[in-house]
Length: 290
Ligand code: GLU
Image 1 (cartoon, rainbow, N blue to C red):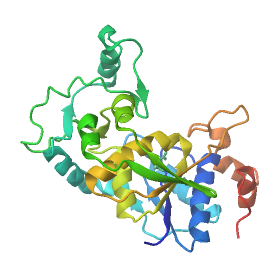
Image 2: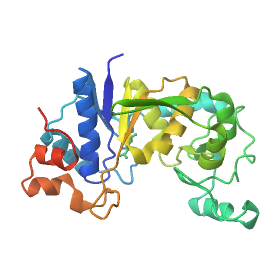
Image 3: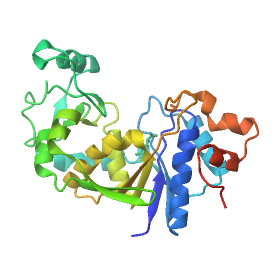
Image 4: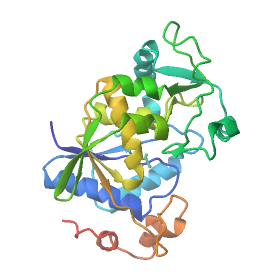
């Protein structure tokens, strides 16, 4: 398989230095291996994705000196594929419909019988299970639409094996294992289809990386915990697990991780102030581009 990396931004705000680092690292790695670098637009969140941000992302990345094959994959055009992937999971009784709001989840998870503070995982409060046993349609009827679908994590880890993935960074490489027990307790029944979009970040990213033949996923260490979910989904969906490279996070002067709303760190601002692409490379600790 061709060595393939990707950068997969969500067009919900300006790219900042952290994104530049991720994109440049993925691009440099692919180039060093004579491989491919792909761009994917993760625009399933219709309420937050904006075409103006997308245009700015393309412009910033080209300015940084990156190029990629066109047309790019756009998640909003793949909703049918996401739904098709949910079908076998539903038939196998691995999903359940959930009508809980965020507030319901918080209230149920904080209830005294749950024993103290709610456990928080990569998607926030671990689902306390309210709808898990309530939905008896599982498997025997058609895949429900227009409601949230959650993965029954206990059933999922009982079927998904082996739960290993390779984490590579610089010169080192190690095999990590997702612990089934911790997945049930610390991640829980994650949402695979949101009612408003029919999919979720986790489902889409796993299907897209596989569809695009991505061999090396280069992304920030903040997504490391989510990788456990992705490996479980890859096993359930019969997909190959790429090699992961979770890179260090670029932080601001106070040590805080940069966020989309940190406009002060937006690439556009550095560009407007006259920085060159190699200045950006230097700021994030990468060698000059060729
Ligand atoms: N779309 C995600 C983001 O902008 C990145 C997903 C990934 O790299 O897996 O944070």
